[in-house]
Every structure is written in structure tokens, then in C-alpha cells.
Image 1 (tube, one colour):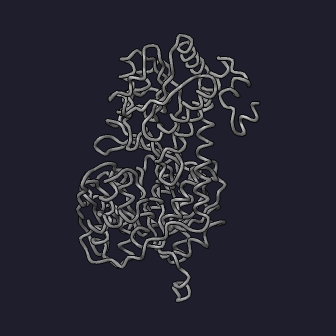
Image 2 (cartoon, helix red, strand yellow):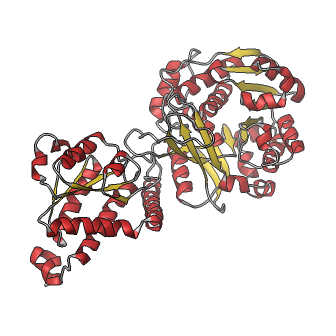
Image 3 (cartoon, rainbow, N blue to C red):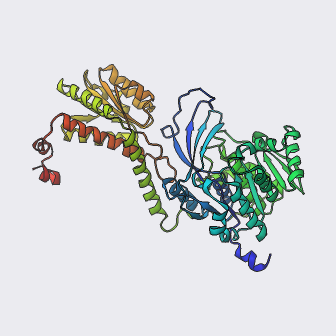
Length: 541
């Protein structure tokens, strides 16, 4: 390689492959066929949270965390999921070279059990639509900027993987292939057995999971080191097999043996542990470590990964510190972490969050049952006719929604007041009398203080209307009427803060107020009597 070529390679590692929105659920166990179980609330409430994920994006994220200049290329869609993923790339300093003409960005439904095990259901979307021609036409120049290229056998068609390896080989760029699924799943879904064989022979380093590696070398038994040795003899390259809690097995020209896993403080979610390992391995090789030491750095990343939910290292400062705490080797010459944002990133994040909310509200509108609004309006109107009152309550962000809803109902013909949920069991429930209605708001339907408030209200003879994102939750089962306000995504970089869910709750309650306004026959004069001042007073007059 010439000095000019080396100077032009300004990216330490680039990759193509799966970049996925992981929609995570907690389950008491990973279920088998015909089994059922209740989903468990996630930290912060709700039963589903969205995280950045995908085999290649994950390991590039961990490599970037450890100082590598990383880039990602390929096909994506210009949809809310794609914007969510690109915002994470920008926060992490991962340069992206993407064509946004895919049918949909990739997503996965992930069910994590109490022991940290998981089941993953993937929808590859645009990644699976990538062709060799697409790679040649759009990304060859970007690929040649790299000192190392990494790809995967998981969602990317084998013809595209082969084209990446061909361009890398011609440019003298070392290549890595992550065999993330067993060959029986890769073929025929991603290509032919012949293509898979060429992929595994063409890469300089292959990192299969143990399950995938056993299919390739069934006669080698169950020992990961023996399997790694057999694969190296078969394909002639460096083989690193990840083996869960046992660590990894390596078969290479300069080293053959096992590297023990680092112990995590707590196993929360094993999703992406192998991706994090590969990111650390790439970083170690870049920083000049031998293969055994690089694998130890990879193990430190894997341990840090499984101590929290999600596979991508979004909390870069904390996770870098944790990896270095777990790392038992020499000091690493790490570059500063990338700046939190760049020009326009804040606006993209803001509009992306708005897009998510609008899409979730459209989906909600499509599944709302008119009969539920009829039942809720009838229940509240019947209570009002018989002298009953309406109390609106919630905890956290729903508490603020409850204040708004009580005010809106009162101004549109249904007298209502706010009920402080956490005070309900300490005397505030005295505002409730038999025949009243309590409107209880909770995204998860499992918030302890709200459930206690509903129990007290029930004991005092009140009926309950639930506004919740989990109609089958404890709150939903306790209510007389349930109004669905569920969303799958919140929007924003972390996807945790109540944004879309709060908007859904607010608008469902606004819709209920419109139904009650109709039922009680509110007139313009009635509205003016309740709201004589301000611009609305002028309009109603």
C-alpha cells in the first residue's frame, strides 16, 4: 500500500449490515410454542422500549466508544426508525454513508427474561434489500477510506457480503465477518451454500457464535477451542468463537486457545453481548494488542454490555469508564469521545420525535374502538345525572395530563376535579363519594401509587375509567371501561421519556371530552358562561 493510500484511509473501521431498532420487552421467561405469559413493566413504566441495535451498528458503536473512527454504509429508509438510528450514529461520532431508498428500516422484537436470556424476532427491511450492485454503485469509495472493514451474516444478502469482501481484498483492507446466525438459517434466506462457503473463506477474521460454528464443524464436538481449530483448518483464516459465559475460543497463526469472559456485576440483558465483544476486539487490534489481549478487551465490553438494557453503547462516557474498569491490560491511547451533537442534530432529533408521535397516534386512531368512548361517556353522564362527580388522577407525567383533562372536562360541560393519586390513601380520597367516577391515567397500568388510589376509590363506591397503554394491565382489569392510549415508541434519542404516550393520553381524553360535550348538549352560550374571558370568551360571545 502506498503512503498516499494510507493517508487517504481516514476511517479506522467501516461496516455494512444490520442497523436495527430493537423493541424490547421483559418476560418472566422465554416462551415455547403455545405458551402465554404477562409482560413485565420496564424501568420508567410501559411494557416496550425502543433501543438502537443491529449486529454491525452495535459493534461499530463499541469500537467508537474505544476511540476508533468508525463509519457505516448501506441501505436504509427515510422513516422514523431510520431517523432514530441515524441520530444515534451522529451522537456516537459514527460517520454514515447511507442510501435512503429502502422499503423500511430494520427492526426487531426482543423478549428478555429474568435471567437475561432473550428471544429475537427480526424484520430486516432495507438491509435485506441490499444487492452487490448497490454496494458497487454507491459505497465502494467510502469502503476504500477504511483501514478495516466489517460485515455480517445475519440480515445482509450474501451477494452483498461477497462484493464488500471483494472490494476490500482488491484494496488490501483486512476484513471481518460476524456469522451471527447458524448456516441453516442463513441458507437459503440470504443466499446459497456455495456463497456462504466463499464468504467464510474470503474474510481475514471470522467471528461465529458457538451455535453457528457447531453447524459448520459437527465432527469437532462441543468444545469451542476444538471447533475453532477445525474451522481454521477448513477456511485458513483467523477464527474467534464467542461462547457466552465461558468466554471465547481463538484459532490464529500466533495464538490458539481460550480467553475467559469477564464477570458482570449483574446480568440484565444479554442482547448484543457478542456485538460488544467484537467491537472491543476490533478496538484492541487497532490499538496494537495481540489477539489474546484484544479478545480480553472484547470480553470487558461484553460484560459492560450485559449489565444494562440494550445493546448499543448510547451512554458512552459511563460505559467507557466501565470497560476500562473491567480491562486488565495496558493503558489504551483512547481519543476523546465525540461531541454530543453537530450542526442540525438537535433539529433532526426534535422533528424525529414529532414524526414518531404522529405515526404512533395514527396507529392508535386505527385501532380505537368507538364503543369504548360510548361506554365511557354513558358511565360519566349517568353519574352526573345522579349527582356524581368526576375525578381525574395519574402519577408522574400522567399527573400533569390529569390536571389538563380535569380542566378541559369542566370547561366543556362535565364538572371534574383533580385527584392526587399519592395522597388518595392519606385522606384525599375523602373528595370521592359513592356514585362518582374516577378517570385513572397510566401508560403501564401497573404504577403502584395509582393502583392504590383506584383501590381506595373503589372502596368508596366510585366507578373507574382507565386511560392506559396496557389495556390488559392491573389497571385495565380493575376498570369499568378502558380507553386504549398505547404507543410502541416514545421518540427521542433514548426512546424512554413519555412523549408519544403522554400525547396519546392527552388526545384520548380530549376525544372523551368531545363525546361528553355532545352527550350533555353543551351550547355556545353554555361554553361562554364557563369561559367569558380572553380570546375564547370573545369567540364564544
